[in-house]
Image (tube, rainbow over the protein chains, first blue to last red):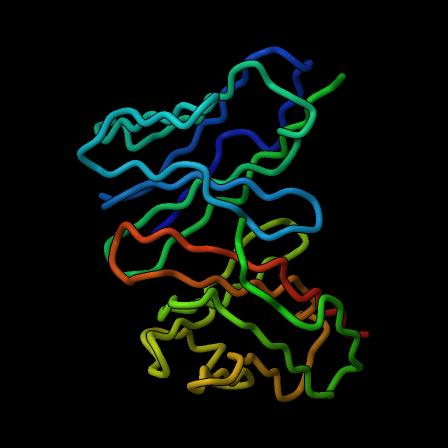
Length: 110
Length: 115
């Protein structure tokens, strides 16, 4: 079945540290997206990385894609308290829909 | 920042009651999605539209759920006879285009509680 899943349910780091969230997916994809959802808000897209790309950056964020291991990672450098959120990967399997993972809850401690 | 508007933000219904929620997509976005997000943060795709036409929907949507996106009116998702298991956050997202690479812009959601 189509699936995208983050590898850890929760992570916690101190402000200023770097953190990486990992994700794995099944079967081939056309693209992999990373979303962030803060409490009381809908998800917001952070990065979209296409299947023929290996890395994408957006400010303090860096996403990688490894199609051979069917995995992706999202790294955040110099974390801030406002980065506290649930981070989702979402896979595009080529049928208009995207399939979300269950999310990794990231807490940035002061 | 997303400009997708969802109303109401909170909805409380008794079992068997109708529950209706609305979504105004971002201006110029012809594609609209509805998702159900449960308390474990898991997403379930329900239905999507391009303009007023249904593109895809799951079986659940066909039975107790109905949705429409009429022209010049908000999109809506209605549960005909609410069940306790329908308690969730209902998210509407719009996209400027279909296809494999289109970003989805989400509203804040309608949190439905079925007592």
